[in-house]
Image (cartoon, rainbow, N blue to C red; front, side):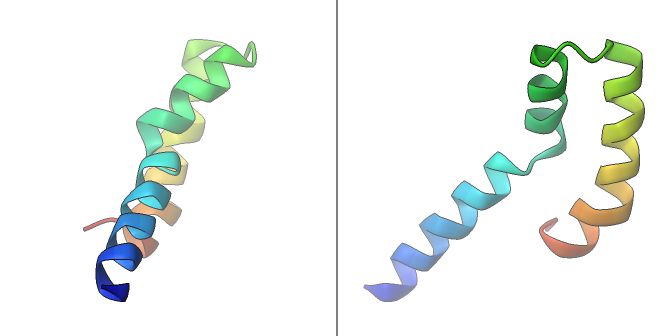
Length: 54
């Protein structure tokens, strides 16, 4: 039962830290689409894929 809870928590974390999700939040904060895309590309390759990516 604990394993199911952990998987669910990990999936929620992956969703919240997904580069597309981050991009949407950045644009909602008023950052231009071009800048948000650049930030997310760096974030995806430098952080997300090495830690939470599958």
